[in-house]
Length: 71
Length: 287
Image (cartoon, rainbow over all chains, first blue to last red):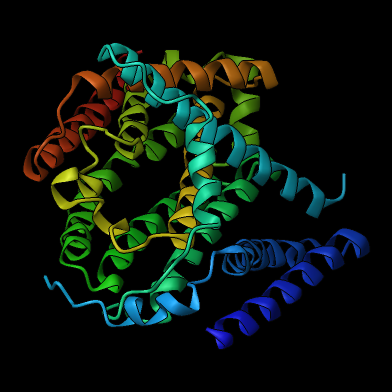
């Protein structure tokens, strides 16, 4: 979970920086399109991964070892 | 306006209006079925709620594909917003975006490892076989207007009147396509309740919220393209009234129509596509 948290923060910072760059510096149109198509979705995803509720320590085992009810 | 700000604003508008229209649709469906139904804002609240829920990822999921496919859905509909309201570009790009959406449905189902997802994945290929012919509506539009560029089509309609009057069967084809993408649609075989939530079954928590954002943008964009291409130059109020009217009409159809089984769904869609293409060509030759 720590890896997920760290990578979520990294992607969040990267995407917010890219979006702010495009907002402030008005780069060429194709760069703005690329930033929008790649970084807006990653911004939303990383924000979600940061905001999502974390499993409580005492419930972690229950979550991991829940019997596989199978398909 | 700064291009990035323009894109961000349009994506935000698409998400908010798309979510509210989904909420309105559920409300109208409920009232027709004599239920009180959820508040109109419920779909938007659900989307946001999923972002703060605890999430987990199934062992059977094909990582990182399982997450990447949800990002891809968002990316393609952000692209649609750019091609549509922002630059009023080519309808062919929109066709490409729609084709990618079918691939996402297919891969989201297969990446989760759930049998419901896999069944939905097969149905996505099945439904693509019917929905892509419906997109042949673009050929009819091209034959009528001699252009694929949205801004040129708007100008054409400003001079010659709305296309819905000159190629009504093409408009009907596009309407069936929109109907296919609405929740609880008779053609929604990829998300039919017989397979739980189809390709979204194993995308829960934050990923479900993420998919719902993309779907709200997709709904707004489909309505935007329909109104722009068939009704013509519209103001903000015109778009809002048009979107509400189409959503209510679709809610009415969905509330009184059962979900078709995959074979019937495909056959009905292909029949509409056939009637639309042949009928439009005949009308164009006669008129």
